[in-house]
Length: 365
Image (cartoon, rainbow, N blue to C red; front, side):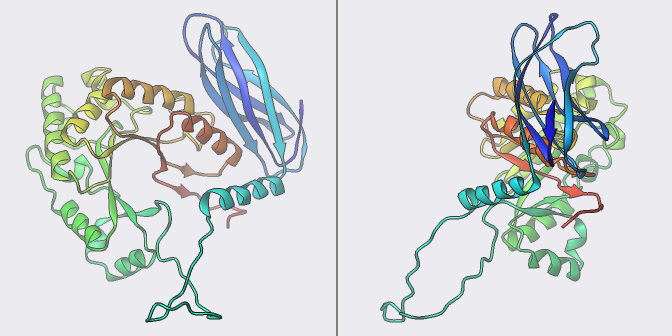
């Protein structure tokens, strides 16, 4: 039992399961409001796996109990070296401020000179930051090509990066088999380039069966493989050097449209082919609920790291790989987010929140 303040971080708990295969194990906090999930790990049989997690709540402080559970009732769960860190909201804010001072700020010494190069003394001046010091952006759709109000709003935010909502997706660029049309995406890319906005390529493939071109759903496996090869050889060279990243096989931990038809290795082969066609562009894994929902084991941090390992084995050290977490929040459990990002950071790859949105609710700023 631990006394709960505003939140608690599960810094680590080492988990091992009996049996012969990996089993998802969840950590659950029993609070006055019921059982609250706070993390999940793909626990290994025969060796120890580290589980990290966390929980924040709006309720008052109080005692909580800690449970580790699995849906598999035939195994035993062994737990060792559990480290918990309760915290108040004030302590969390203070840690945020310290991190901002350390990571986001630096001291700069300025010397102001006149036209002849002489130092000006006792002079007042101001500095305004014109662009973000780190990648931040917003989605863009084709309405920006004709809507002046949309253009003015987007440019006023000075976003250095954008992602097209749908215009590069396969169902947009090849609505009928063989009838490719990149005109909208090309025009949007030209507009972004004109204003110094970099573009993330989204996406080459999408594993969700509901978001496919209508004509591919009934193709034979052989014809589908031919179509995917054509898609790769069309879109990747076309935008080589024009996009800074590719979401290659979108949401391939939650869905398996191509995998179910073309075999388990097809997703990795999509990344391999993309890298062969464009060695300089960063290739993203991109999925949801990795930081949003501690109950979803499909793309949990440990499952994500497993997928990263698979890609690294196929692509080798030369490919640029990055982690994309979508960030579709109904509410934010920031302690769990922190633990999930810490786990992902162990891969030592860039981590981007790629599709951030938050449902409206109380206590928002």
